[in-house]
Length: 348
Image (cartoon, rainbow, N blue to C red; front, side, top):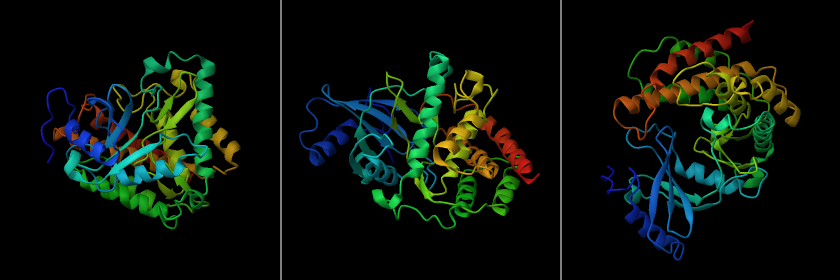
């Protein structure tokens, strides 16, 4: 169980124990008193900015309370970040992985601080002019295509996942995650899971999968270039089109949804290119046939619905950190309905 935070200390971060661990494992790194603040609150893993008055670093750990098995694996995220260093995919440099729960109450890792902005709100994206919105969109797609083009063996990730049967396992995995977070009935969600399981497509090539790729999981520099891709806790080696289907859902799946705390300020309603244009860009950049993408989009709807149901579960059990969670539960059923509608469209 996590100890209560000291005054001025964010939940889940014990600065005294963190300082002692860093001094032991990375002597000379810290030169002054350690401070910390929460910079992302509880929707996924917890992210803190820590500093000593001379340098700044980022600490990542799982959320407090109810944690779904395998959904918040710090060692996986640390491993893939370390493997991608030096590739065409920009990532923060890792410093340390700690799997000893006695330090912060859960495994965590420390990585470099990359200056820039994470575009999470309409207020932020409205400050971009039309050309900047388009350029960022193309960069986002091109970085994803570059990730999928990497041979996992070449960066030491050849055994990071099991491509054979990947899609079948993904449907089972997220169905299991749903069962672990059930607190209510949701119209259509079991039907969606069953239809996805019955219609799994063949995987044409394996690659490194990010697992949650979207605009607000990258850092954008002052020059409007993508400087780092973040949030790799669900990364694996499998079917890359799962990333693309999920990106399409994030891009337009929440269009017109009020009080949406999950993904904001993107898509054509905010002056960005359409999801179709992003998919066409990916197909051109990677020479990939996307004719069967509807299944992956439907799976994206299912996956996000399950993730949001897990967040809703933590919220109603007072296990979230930060605000904006009270409306998450209402988003689940509309996402399920869109997933079912996408599969109907595929079958025609």
